[in-house]
Image (cartoon, rainbow, N blue to C red; front, side, top):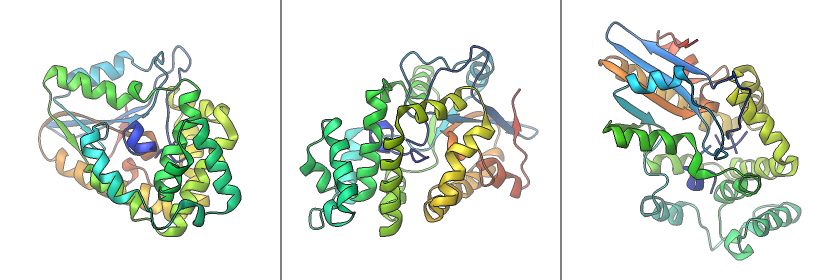
Length: 292
């Protein structure tokens, strides 16, 4: 369920979530929180989509058009001038090759996957496990026809810019990269192992996962995006999901104290499950309602 370079190439972090055309009447889930003078819409995004994916709906368009600003996880993730120095600082380890950090079998699998994506093995070998995981996760996805340029964030950002709407972010690019770079060695290895496991299971599993997003099937999203990470990789789950959701809920509470209508778009894995952003908001006395 690891999206959740995965984040560098698709907008650094989450493959946690991707996009796929669902049934004609289906649409991704949308929530809102509100008080007497504020409404904040919460939309779960997909960081990479097939170019022909249809995910817009009158409900989503109405929420977007009524919103005066857009909040994302980060801003600048697709800007090489922003991301490259951070990746060089936190993602490379030339003194300790990747081949020395994981098993020979795992390294061989990673090398084969890298070659399939046109990445030289020597480039892979200087990456830290977290960066290798993010980079390799895109290989089967792109080969299956998904395009980082078609992701939801890309579309929303362009529309906000065209409309002159302010853009905000929950995290800075460096903060988001540090979530990965500061993982323990075991958690880093788990992150890479999960990516290699997902690659083995193929695009069919990815299509199934993303079809749930397109259909607004939150129960399936929870099972596929949250339950696996929570059960198999608890340290990753606590760091990448729970703590971030708590932080975002605090920021949303502050934002709700203002006024106006806002649209918030974050990875779908953050809006499902027992520790979702909505669950964290409930602990703060704020009820999120699904928009029907």
